[in-house]
Amino acid sequence: MSVADHYTYRVHWSAEDGEYVGTVAELPSVSWLAEERTEAFVGIQRVVEEIVAEMLASGEEPPAAIADKHYSGKFQVRVPEEVHRRLAIRAAEQGVSLNALASSRLAAD
Image 1: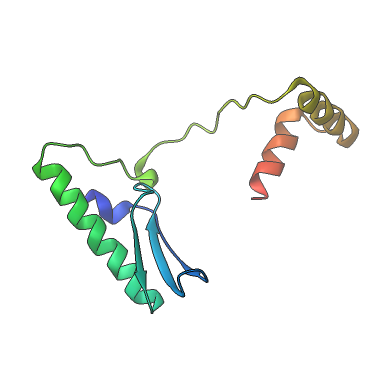
Image 2: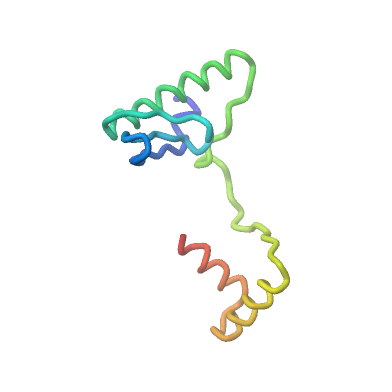
């Protein structure tokens, strides 16, 4: 099994290209176009396997799979003071912490 087996693949329709586009989050500059959704998925997986094999052969470290990383659930976001103030007011009005308000808004994505 290759590290690329755990990568984050997506396939979406591109109206601009008139085809499906396969992408991989860990290598954002890589994509694969195909007329069929499954062809785009298989194509992007194949090209990523080739890229990872080339990286390993040349002594490069391929990107770690997002799925294999550990996340603590914490990160800092810097916002302008006025945004911070408005969010704090909204949180107080809703009777929740600023953290709970921000978390619920981020989770809505």
